[in-house]
Length: 64
Image 1 (tube, rainbow, N blue to C red):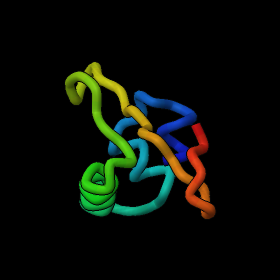
Image 2 (cartoon, rainbow, N blue to C red):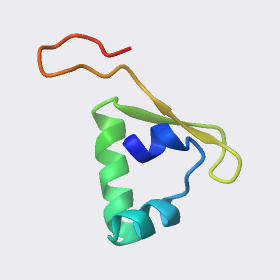
Image 3 (cartoon, rainbow, N blue to C red):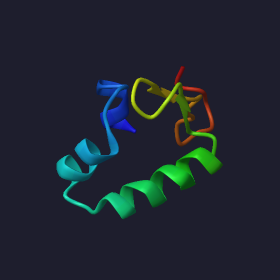
Image 4 (cartoon, rainbow, N blue to C red):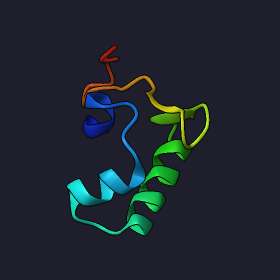
Protein backbone atom coordinates (compact mmCIF):
# COMPACT_ATOMS: atom_id res chain seq x y z
CA UNK A 1 0.00 0.00 0.00
CA UNK A 2 2.87 2.37 0.77
CA UNK A 3 4.30 1.93 -2.74
CA UNK A 4 0.84 2.57 -4.20
CA UNK A 5 0.58 5.76 -2.12
CA UNK A 6 3.94 6.95 -3.46
CA UNK A 7 2.99 6.13 -7.08
CA UNK A 8 -0.68 5.41 -7.69
CA UNK A 9 0.10 4.26 -11.25
CA UNK A 10 2.64 1.61 -10.21
CA UNK A 11 2.28 -1.64 -12.14
CA UNK A 12 2.08 -5.15 -10.77
CA UNK A 13 5.42 -5.93 -12.41
CA UNK A 14 7.02 -2.89 -10.75
CA UNK A 15 5.59 -3.96 -7.38
CA UNK A 16 6.93 -7.46 -7.96
CA UNK A 17 10.42 -6.16 -8.72
CA UNK A 18 10.55 -3.70 -5.82
CA UNK A 19 9.25 -6.23 -3.28
CA UNK A 20 11.28 -9.11 -4.76
CA UNK A 21 8.30 -11.45 -4.99
CA UNK A 22 6.51 -13.09 -7.91
CA UNK A 23 3.76 -11.44 -9.94
CA UNK A 24 1.47 -14.20 -8.71
CA UNK A 25 2.13 -13.15 -5.10
CA UNK A 26 1.33 -9.51 -5.95
CA UNK A 27 -1.91 -10.56 -7.68
CA UNK A 28 -2.93 -12.65 -4.66
CA UNK A 29 -2.16 -9.81 -2.25
CA UNK A 30 -4.03 -7.26 -4.38
CA UNK A 31 -7.07 -9.54 -4.45
CA UNK A 32 -6.99 -9.78 -0.64
CA UNK A 33 -6.56 -6.01 -0.24
CA UNK A 34 -9.53 -5.40 -2.56
CA UNK A 35 -11.67 -7.87 -0.59
CA UNK A 36 -10.69 -6.06 2.62
CA UNK A 37 -11.70 -2.77 0.91
CA UNK A 38 -8.25 -1.26 1.47
CA UNK A 39 -7.55 -0.54 -2.22
CA UNK A 40 -9.42 -0.30 -5.50
CA UNK A 41 -8.44 0.11 -9.13
CA UNK A 42 -9.84 3.10 -11.02
CA UNK A 43 -9.81 2.85 -14.79
CA UNK A 44 -8.17 0.27 -16.99
CA UNK A 45 -5.11 -1.86 -16.27
CA UNK A 46 -3.10 0.20 -18.75
CA UNK A 47 -4.17 3.76 -17.96
CA UNK A 48 -5.82 3.48 -14.55
CA UNK A 49 -4.52 4.09 -11.05
CA UNK A 50 -4.74 2.68 -7.54
CA UNK A 51 -7.10 4.24 -5.03
CA UNK A 52 -6.22 3.78 -1.35
CA UNK A 53 -9.44 3.57 0.65
CA UNK A 54 -9.96 4.65 4.27
CA UNK A 55 -7.20 3.36 6.51
CA UNK A 56 -7.54 2.90 10.24
CA UNK A 57 -4.72 3.00 12.75
CA UNK A 58 -4.28 0.41 15.52
CA UNK A 59 -6.85 2.22 17.68
CA UNK A 60 -9.54 2.13 14.98
CA UNK A 61 -9.23 5.82 14.10
CA UNK A 62 -9.33 6.88 10.47
CA UNK A 63 -5.97 8.05 9.14
CA UNK A 64 -7.60 10.12 6.38
